[in-house]
Length: 152
Image (cartoon, rainbow, N blue to C red; front, side):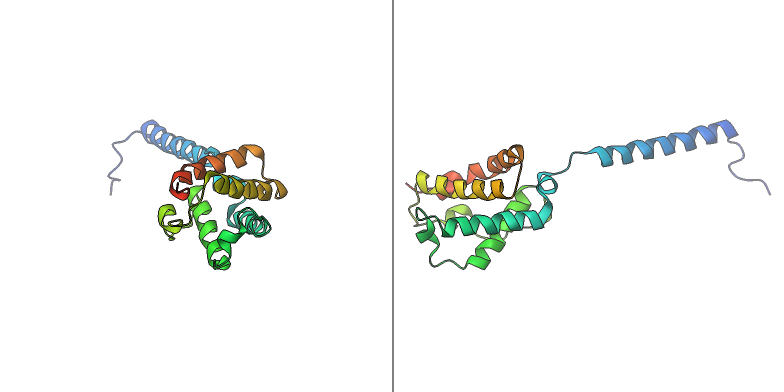
């Protein structure tokens, strides 16, 4: 019985095989050299959790803004912030909390209040040795939320 592919010459089959292997190798090499997400560069969920926890500790000690959190469920807030940062930086988490407008409605926060929170976050990132470039990338993701947080 004759092979149904016998009409193909060996050089043609070999060329097709080599081409397929080369293409697969090129795709794998691209996948391996693709830039890591900010989530990965920050150290994933454990590192984000540590930074957020330390930020909350900083906020608790910050007399400029700690009164805004007096009646807040801190463990829930931490979970939501971790998920928000995780998702925003390309991680696998899903933020399910309120919109920034809804969460801050009626709080009458001003720019100084917002900036104090950002300073507390930066202090946390510094103490956790987050490189300045990564800090700036994270802040660039969070900064557009400012108009929805600050109510004039």
